[in-house]
Image (cartoon, rainbow, N blue to C red; front, side):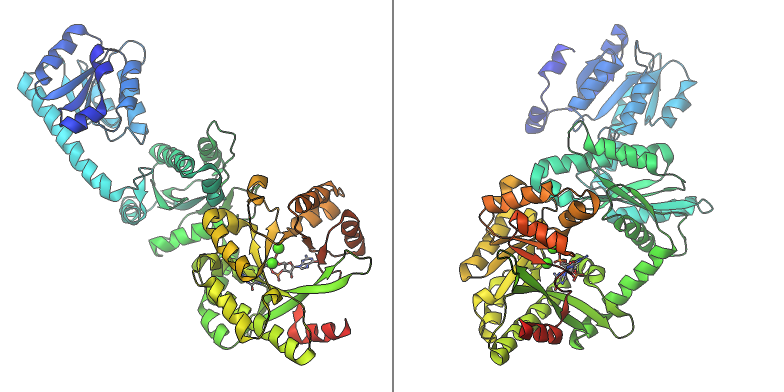
Length: 567
Ligand code: C2E
Ligand code: CA
Ligand code: CA
């Protein structure tokens, strides 16, 4: 590296408004000095004698470099290869490159590889060189301005809005070609943000962006960042996206031990008569269909998904009227204390069902995630809490007894600043005690914004509400984090019962989970308990409370009332 390069400091250039930096890549001493002499009045000159050295300088100055003058005939790595290297890298591709050569044949190759201009050797008059350099820089600066508005600042890919415009333009040039719409999603991105920090998560997104850029450069098409952790690609039809999936996964995971799982949804051979955004909504549905799968990473949009989409649409359309017509019913499933040999009824969980007049009984698994994704869950949950609280009040009054009922609180509800007031009002209005209403908060909610969640949960506990951590062990929180959380009970994720009793027959993991609950001094609730054997095993291991089909399924309030009376 030359002394000049070593002294070179970007911050200084910006601070003092110094000349624009231009890199000359030329192994011939005389030619190099000649160009240097022509340009140094107007530009800050950097020099490299080999492509390898040039690449180092370019990487080190990727944000400020105004132009590269590139001799094609270099020792070692050739100029044309360096040019290709620059153009395929999303961070470098904006830098204009003027090619220098005595071989007119290579002009076409250079232009094809992305050179912005060409200066023949021997060199023309120095005014000509200066004029060409100025023009290339000016053109690229104009392009930079456009880039600024049409690109996502983090990844350098198009932003969503411009992507749709360019996709339309792409169509006009590829009318008869089969084209695919892709949506790529990072699984558990939120968790990654929380665990490894924002900077790390951003780095992963940048790596994915760079890989997708490479993909469309070699296969054709365009790419964008749709939002947060979601990307889109519009490209010529392909039959197999497994290689893309592997490449993006490898790039995203990098050298780190963290494995990044990426889902790709493909709407193949798009129908070009439908709206552009809808084509990507189809691809998104396909990607979403992989949400609970860890083994699959590519899904195609097909007719079955079309039916799912139509169903989803229907649920959204019907939501409002369903609320006013009270189509949502609150069911109750008993919880049993099993510390003593004879199990005793000690509470219930309120679970919602949708009794749809035309579609029949719809289980919550079909609509809760949907309503969580668009915020409707808040209204539904408020409705369920009101119904549940009123029901407990009614039992108290009429039967003179009741059991504590837990309601589910979605992570979206946790962002509501009035949450504690809402619950206090429910308690007052229905003549309940705070102990009558338990709140189930899913483990994943705690990782969203732990500080904030801890504050909210502490506030609720301070008022007297009991907090149960739902789906405990489903993998969102670390042991370290759990010890700091304000909770009154752990509700073991049902998956543990499934694996222990149906898959492995090994109850060791249950023992570990129970050790954790004892370490935290909170009771453990096991749900999804279906057989006597499971109940007895859990009892033997010291589990406190059990819920599941073994005792009873969730039932309408009326049936639960009859059930209460027999206890
Ligand atoms: P969850 O909170 O983990 O609820 C437990 C689920 O396990 C319930 O499913 C329950 O019916 C089911 N279950 C209980 N015992 C057994 C058993 O022995 N075997 C099996 N296989 N399953 C059992 P459900 O009612 O379909 O609810 C599914 C999920 O929907 C709930 O999971 C919860 O996350 C959500 N959910 C239900 N109601 C509400 C609500 O009002 N608000 C919110 N935000 N979410 C709700
Ligand atoms: Ca629950
Ligand atoms: Ca659960």
